[in-house]
Length: 168
Ligand SMILES: Nc1ncnc2c1ncn2[C@@H]1O[C@H](COP(=O)(O)OP(=O)(O)OP(=O)(O)O)[C@@H](O)[C@H]1O
Ligand SMILES: O=C(O)C1=C[C@@H](O)[C@@H](O)[C@H](O)C1
Ligand SMILES: [Mg+2]
Image (cartoon, rainbow, N blue to C red; front, top):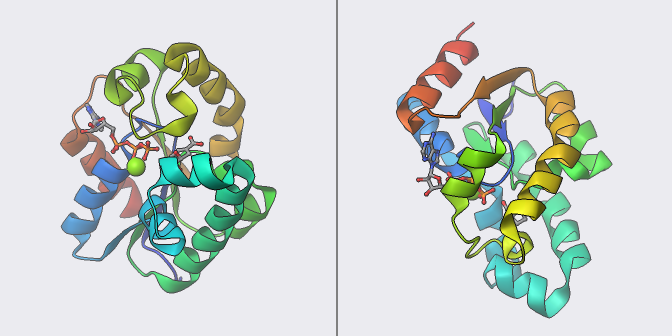
C-alpha cells in the first residue's frame, strides 16, 4: 500500500508527537506532525490561530493539512488531537495504517500539565480533558486499525508496541 507508513491519532498528551518521532526514527522514514504543518500554513502558532481566527478556521486549515499529509507522506504522520472530529478526515483515513494511542484521564492530565500551548485546555483542563476523551474515544476507535495503551508506559515501550503491530 502506498501512503504513510503509519498515521498516529489520539487525544492531547497521548504521545502522538513523541512516539511518532520514535517510530519514524526506528523505521528510517520521515516524521510529519500535522499540527506543525498547520502552523506553517497559517504562519503562526496554534494558540494564535485560535485567538485571531477562531476554532472553525483552525479546523478548516486542519482538514486541508491532513489531506496534504496523507497524500504527500510515505513516513509517519501524527494528527492533531481533534482531527478525527471531521467526518471528511475520518473518511480519508480509511485504508491507512492508523494507530490510536489511548490514554486515560490521569496520565493525560499529568502529561499536558496546565495545557500551555493547547488552547482547548487552558480553561478547566481536567473537566475539558474528560469531555474530550469521552467525546472522541469512539472516533479514534472507528478510524484505527491498531490501539496501543500508553498509561504508565514509557514512550520507548509504546513505540516498540507500535512497531511490532505495524510489522504484522
Ligand atoms: N508514554 C509517555 N509517558 C510519559 N510521558 C509521555 C509519554 N508520551 C508522551 N509523554 C510526554 O507527554 C507530553 C505530551 O506528549 P506529546 O506532545 O507527544 O503528546 P501529543 O499526543 O502529541 O499531544 P498534542 O495533541 O497536544 O499534540 C510530552 O511532555 C511528552 O514528553
Ligand atoms: O485536541 C484538540 O482539539 C487539539 C489538539 C492539538 O493537537 C492541536 O491540534 C490543537 O491544539 C487542537
Ligand atoms: Mg503533538
